Length: 306
Ligand code: PLP
Image (cartoon, rainbow, N blue to C red):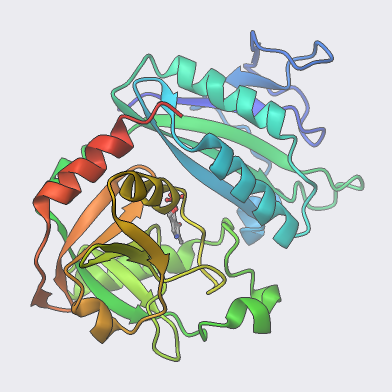
């Protein structure tokens, strides 16, 4: 089994967990802001609102050879998700220390993923304190997806593209723990013979994957559908835009339909962990992949040291 490690944030809602060994790192006041614990032992209350209602937020951060990628952007998005859910603002310094401690325990694995989770806490806790933890594991091998590409189907998400403005209480654009739908669509994709999904708004615009951003190349421009569409601001997309501009490509945002996407020169689903997966089939039709550009993107993404 791949190595998994866990750090529990010393959010006041948790007593010092059993099996805890105090972490070496400490916060400015001298107290360790988290404890490294045995990930195979139970730590979460059955009354935790993250478990009973999916009421919480998370981030998945990719790591190569001990270097976490886009941590600032992930922590910014984590804090933004907390704001949208009206959760207490996470102490980002403590979370950063816990991320680093988990990475240190992963023994320089070639590729790993570290996940931060914060929930609304334990139901009935009069102080309503959040629960927080960080865990990491060695990544599966994503080479086939990166090199040979993936088959993707478009599926209706059921919301208009302007849902983030018209119905902010639906929390689109926040990275919440409620990912049952994001997993269900993968099962639907498998039933249709595909590997992954691109969500389309109910009014017909391309949005994002269930765990990825959509990128497409048209001529000299690397584009993505946009922000404020009830989709996540992708950290991988952000870094790839920097890479593209340094390489002389234009970058930008464009609202488009699936038919317009099908006309793109190349399409990718990009995300922390799998990085850039070229789309070789869209809704059953073969799509050209740009192997050279995909290889360059993945080499750049995996070589990041921050
Ligand atoms: N959109 C959704 C819904 C996601 O879950 C993710 C990643 O988990 C992304 C986009 C891509 O974000 P990132 O590149 O920061 O991993």
